[in-house]
Amino acid sequence: MASDTKSNTSVTKISKLEFNDPLYLHPSDTPGASLITQKLKATENYNVWSRAMKLALQTKNKLGFIDGSCPRYEYEDDDVLLGQWDRCNSVVLTRILLSLSEDVYNGQIFSKTAESVWSESKETYDKIDASVTFNLYQKINSCS
Image (cartoon, rainbow, N blue to C red; front, side, top):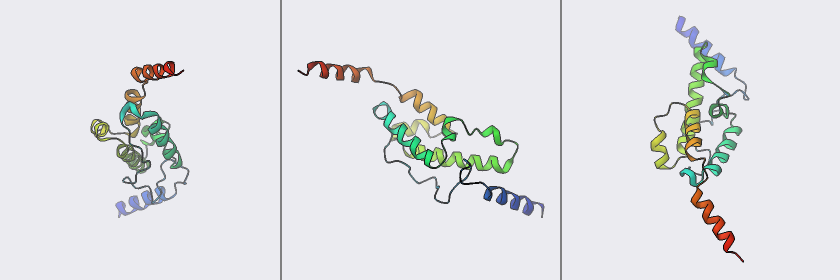
């Protein structure tokens, strides 16, 4: 009997989340749904991939899961909302993982949070390749 009450409280608390709450999950927010078609291929396309992913996550009100503005510790006093945070993080994490090339994916599959994948990807791939820059300058200088 007590577990029924707890279960009903959980359902009620989650169903009262507003659509603009980062913990709100729309029925179409399935983990397997790809948000973007571009796959991250390392430094080659990090900036384009990052921008596309941010736009897609912003439309779902889930940017907080990658930029740290929706931290897990805020919900540690509430088991129901903590569980909902874990579900939302899993949805975002899965969507990010689905947008990674196979090589990048293999290095991130055991990550626990979307924020950690995001920050590690930024740290690793948000670099300007000096050889590409040099080649561009060389091409510019050779134009007459």
